[in-house]
Image 1 (cartoon, helix red, strand yellow):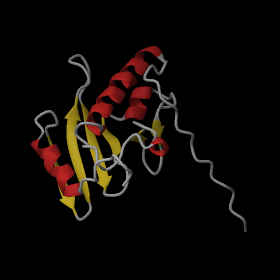
Image 2 (cartoon, helix red, strand yellow):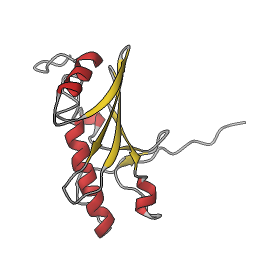
Image 3 (spheres, helix red, strand yellow):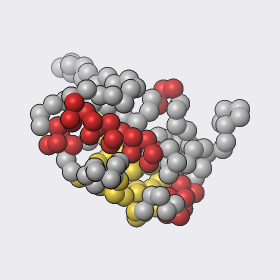
Image 4 (cartoon, helix red, strand yellow):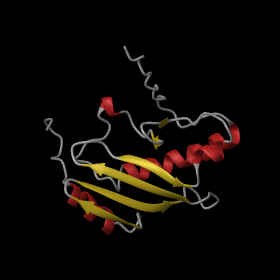
Amino acid sequence: MKPGRPPSLTAAQQFLNLRGDPAVPGEGCLRPGGLTWRCDLQPTPLSRVYSVRIEYRQGTTPRVFVDSPNLEELAQGRHLPHVYREPEIHLCLFMPAREEWHGGLLISRTIVQWTMLWLYFFEEWLASGEWKGGGEHPTPRIEKPKLR
């Protein structure tokens, strides 16, 4: 733990906070050292509703997946901005190397809110073709050729 940083919350504490937060209605499951949370998010009253899944394993950073609608279908062949593709598409919400998120932060007050912003800027990108949400695009991993 870094000096001045709150201690990491357990997966159970994160789960109970998500379950008790009326701003994040959803459901999930808790397992030893991790959780899955599913909820529907709508970035604006005029936006579509997105079914989102948050996967969290204690000691790692949460990953957010949009289960529906299909983001690639909405993009109509355009390369999705600010996503990781390992192994399935999940959202790039912050820079892990800069420690913008750590285990002492509540998922409901950070990850969920950042997801809402990402979805808002995604819808703007669908209309304009320009990502206006700032940040840095993650660089895709380049697989090294395997030696025989």
